[in-house]
Length: 238
Picture 1 (cartoon, helix red, strand yellow):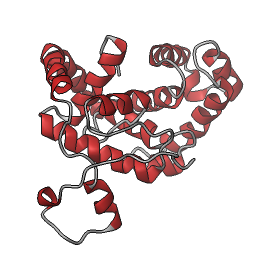
Picture 2 (cartoon, helix red, strand yellow):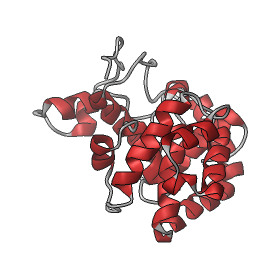
Picture 3 (tube, helix red, strand yellow):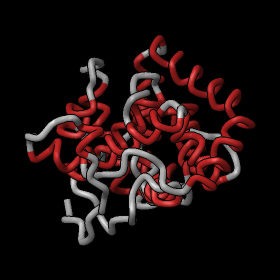
Picture 4 (cartoon, helix red, strand yellow):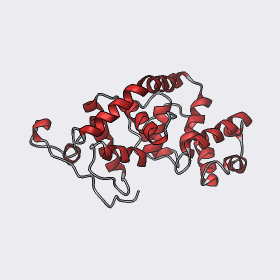
């Protein structure tokens, strides 16, 4: 992981923490803003949330129902998340649905999968390889955690693993930190600037910042993610 070149700058609130001695990790987290700084922007965000709240809750309920889905459905969702880096989510969804229809997602050779991803998913050869490797591991080990996914599934980082777990109803308290989320966190005052790159350690710090921000403004973390995403794209997807 490339070290970030800039640091998230934050305010220090001793009174809120209520402690004088902390571990390096807790100090780093506590130094981040605990409340929104731009009241006008937050007010606008809450207004949009009110309009989209029902559809967002409905979509999250659909994700939660994935907990009872069969192993094949869960694996298909994992493949979707493997495909999404630097590719459009709608195109990735189309590609995975195509692979499901042909059955190649569960038994097809790497070259066949790559051909079906081509034109819809960037780096289709690499991602086809990730799918084949993940297939061998995932279908034999359904009890996944984010740490296990990141360690064992090639092509999945903290963002993609969080995305997958959220989409199968198991990651409501995990943040999917990408460029869109960082842009919104900066816009609404949760962070001061957008880092050029994020290490795993910094990912966890920003995730905690977003978790605190969501609590401060009264929008659950998973709902806030979909709200931010819909603000960028104009619709609620996944």
